[in-house]
Length: 285
Image (cartoon, rainbow, N blue to C red; front, side):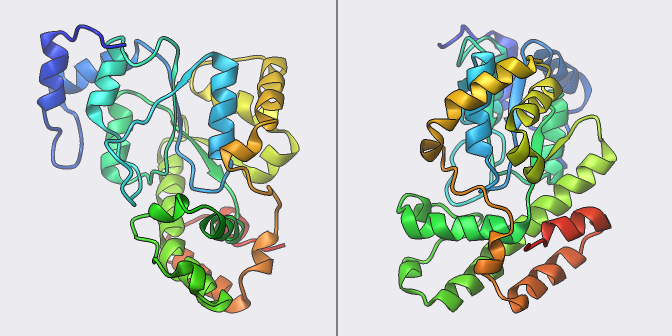
C-alpha cells in the first residue's frame, strides 16, 4: 500500500537530525506525534536468540506484518531507515501493526531514533557462547547466511577452516559485536528501563507464550496468554523455517575452550555490565 504522502511527511524524509541523531524542536515534536498513531513491535535481538521465531509468533498473535526497517543489511548491523517509518505512520506499508526483527546495537544514533517515535524495543539475553555455537552451525549449514556478517565479511574459505580456527574466528571477529550489543543495550535499559523490555532466553525456553505476552504488552499490543500460546504453537510447527536451531542451554561448552571464554570475559570486562548479567552472558553450563 502506498499512501498519498503530504508535504510535511515528504519534507521530514529529507530533513537531517542533529549530529548526535537527536530530532529536536518542531521536527522532533512532529515525529513523536506520528509515532503515537500506530503501534510497532521492534525485536532488537542479537542473532541466534530466537528473534525470528518470536517475531513470527508476534505476527500471528496481532495480525501484524513483517517489515524490513533498514535500507539494506549488507554485512552490517541495523540502522533504522527514516522513510520506512514515515510511510508506515502515514498509513502505508501494511494494514496491521509493523513487526520487525533487527540485529541492532543501542548506539547513540539508534537510541535517538527510537526516542523520536517513542518506540519501545524488546531485547533478549542469552549466553554468548551458546549464540556463537548456534551461529557457527548456521555458517556451516546455510550458504545464504555466509553472505551476511555482523559488521564483517564471512571468509569465503570458512568451511575449509579447522575446528580450532573456526572457534577463533567466531570469538575474535563475531564476539566483539555481541559484547558491544549487550554493553549498549544494558546501559540503555538502566538509563530508560521503561523503554526497553529485557527477556531472558532460559525463561523463554520454559514459557515461550509468557515471553511473547510480555513483549506484546511492552509494545502496547496486549494479548491474552491463551492467544499467545496459540500463536507460539502455530509458529512452533514451522520453527525450522525461522532458523530456530536447537534451543539448548550450555552448548557453547561443546564448541569453545577455556581460552575462548577467557577472551570473551576480557571483552565484556571493558564495560560496566552488572555482575548478574555479566556471569549469565558467559555461562557455558
